[in-house]
Length: 407
Image (cartoon, rainbow, N blue to C red; front, top):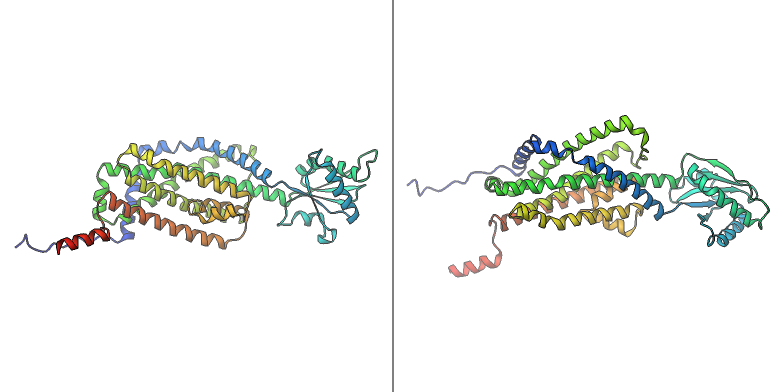
């Protein structure tokens, strides 16, 4: 009989192909909507926040690790200068000093170029005729204190010894601070873009739940494919928005960028740093987007989304503060925590790319972050099937109870 014929279930699309279908559908629907055009105007205000945050980060990095004056004098003169510094530092605001043996470096420029130090300037010559080598900013700030300390080391002569100034283009301290500025600016920009764009994932899924579209998709393709497709569709939309905003920013900088101070080149170089920035932005977006997607799937109404998403938003702010704090202390325990924690890892690695030239840690970090994206997506899809769609394997204890009841 026809009614008793076995039912042949319709074969589903493979996971990758189904995810691509969902991504293409969502990408086209959002990109050509009127709401998206108005959405593109929002980040103009975030640009002002970015400039202010970069200025604050620069000041914070400078206060966290102030530059040091390298004293490269003869041994007796260096001891006298250090003793005079100790006598005066409680009464006058003086720079920190470090004694450097003249035989340890061929020239003051070589001392300034040492990567493992934070020297802002080098004092050489003699106490009667000191010579200060460094950047113009550091020479203007330290010229008076050096003359004061040298005069006190010479038992207080009637006049301060003249200080010869030798200006250099940069120093290790200046370079470290400049790269710290670049790291802070890139980290803040990535955070603002992620905060601005990730919420679209959540609102899109809530709307489709209300319209019962998500139930149709879940019946036709695997739920993992729905989550992955929506995540990558929103990531593609985000890249379109970034391209538009980047074009506007480039036009503004071309017309009036001369008044802005340019950022220092990152340690890995601008081309590679730009590629790393987009790679880590993608990972940061996919990580927080998968969390927002799970929240949107679990929220019964649009009103409930705001309440459920508040902990995730606070978590993202905490992640940003952790990554910003570790920017000025590479290799510290706080940076290791920021690198290991999956949500803060993209931000911490962008900061490290701006300040350290090593490349192999980035390969390991991207693999680590991709693993957590997969875990978050699988967890969200399984939670949605069991709690919302009421499908999926039942717990073992319930199966055992039903089996015993039937027997």
